Image (tube, rainbow, N blue to C red; front, side, top):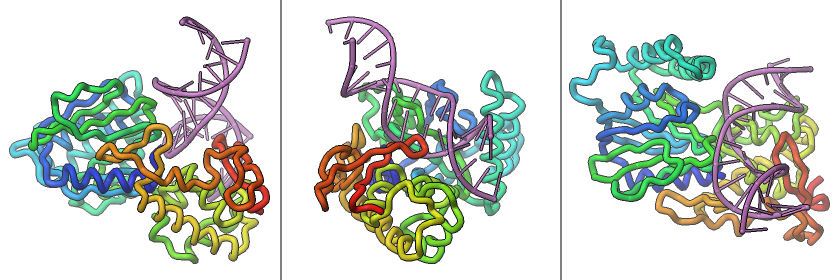
Length: 318
DNA sequence: ACTATTTCCTGGATGC
DNA sequence: TGCATCCAGGAAATAG
């Protein structure tokens, strides 16, 4: 399950592999829910672009796209790139086949994003891996895996493929992409504390809320709370400044350590080079139900909060 | 404005 | 062995 450290690791790996390469052609699969922007718009936006910076924003991978196809005009209207993007989004609303409702909603979200964007921002390819999404860089003759939803041919002769069995992953194009909340590795202590003020929701849920902090998922929420000595069910508003001060430290600590170890390889996560991470060996509570707490030896508990399994030590966390 | 719940999806694990 | 059932998870949609 790629969370911030895994996505960071993958983005760094991809940056090394594909920065500077040029997209020669794009094939997109037929599962509509994979594409958060209209497939035609994704294909048109990627076509003939040079891949610039590749970076992580929350749990998203963002590819900056530079330049454009010579002579390419969307809908032969001669409008600017910016307007072409908006226009094709609108046409997406009108067209909408069986997924009309879904598409319209997704399009509105995209339009809001574009609206908040400085004019002239570069086009971007945004990838969310969901649970099982993977970006594969390989030779064109490599057998096409089951659940391959996108294939991007590169001028270097290689292909960049998006493979996602469970299909929670999403592809889109944007300009000035911004994901809701604040980057946990960049936030300062006071804004961090302010995020949770007055919230009745369990602190675990608040940590998972991407509109507050972006990039923390189930594994790192549990690990941060363990290190801070806070039970996941505690209401966010009930935490003292001291509690939140500790949590502020442990969230950063856990994420940084996990990045340093290349993420956690649970189930089938591997980085852009196919290498496993090592942070799964450092996990103190996640996935350790019934096993002895590494600090006090009492068995790790598992409860369900907001539909997510949450692991904690009843003795070490209050 | 918030919060809680449901939905999507398939491979792997478990149960009988 | 085979078949059914459950479970994992992020985020958007829906309900309260």
